[in-house]
Image 1 (cartoon, rainbow, N blue to C red):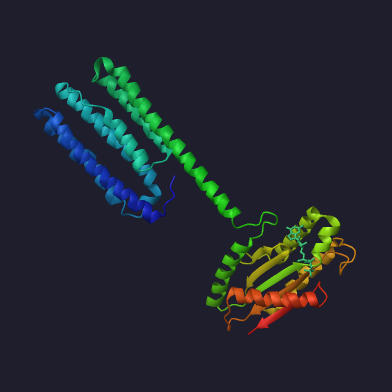
Image 2 (tube, rainbow, N blue to C red):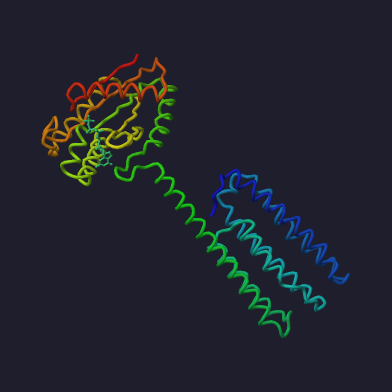
Length: 356
Ligand SMILES: Nc1nc2c(ncn2[C@@H]2O[C@H](COP(=O)(O)OP(=O)(O)OP(=O)(O)O)[C@@H](O)[C@H]2O)c(=O)[nH]1
């Protein structure tokens, strides 16, 4: 499970590998104190001909473009190679002079590769299985640990699988956290009733589209929509049915504005906002007409005394030509002004203001 950007992840791994190489050198120093002098050459040969060069080779490989995509496989291979070169050393020291070299390194290599280098739990299980079999095989061909062979094998195998299981729990917790974060991020941007953007997200996305439109010399339009006589509707049919009308307004907006770049949101209450780029006044007017027609075709009965028999909305739009620059707040104020005019013109109508 990786949550870092590729470049940072590569640097992190490289540092962890360098730390691993340095730790290995520290262990060499400690082991030399433990080992009889006649075994020093054999021991140093193992560490400096196999183990250290393997780590250095992976550090060097981390500078190639093939490393990132294959890093987990490479690090799994590292876990197996470090362990098997250690088995080879245990075997040789036993064969040469029946010296009982400790097996704990096997567990340390696994913890280093799984937690410090971060190989995922599936590969950790694979490497642990291969290493556990290797240890049992070693015990069969060389009775290094004598009577303690069963407890040693159980200790190594148990530790390897506990390590893999702990990685599974960790990966699971991290993926749960990542998906919860994603859900929370969506929830913080979306209006739960309509699934449109909420006001904050609407303004953020609107700002982005505005600067993009300016950079690419495109028209940008801000369109405000407000359901007509909605208080009366709620009073007559209840809040629940009022919510249905709000959802219908969102559906109509989605029907009419289908481009991926169109930004649709609920500005607040029964007021909605759309930000679109690349549409001139005529096209914006055409879409406003489509919204009107869609409400008309739905014939959602309105309350007695409302200005129209079915639910309608009024629309105010402002279209900014590429030659002019205004902030989003200024465009919203102008679109609001146009909406106010549409309301005063008798509702169920639209007003488009062009700024060029
Ligand atoms: N059902 C429902 N009603 C809402 C929601 N948000 C706001 N409203 C109602 O929308 C109504 C808005 O009323 P007003 O601002 O007076 O506007 P209006 O009655 O539509 O009048 P005009 O805008 O002039 O057409 C209020 O009664 C709010 O309670 C909502 O989420 N659900």
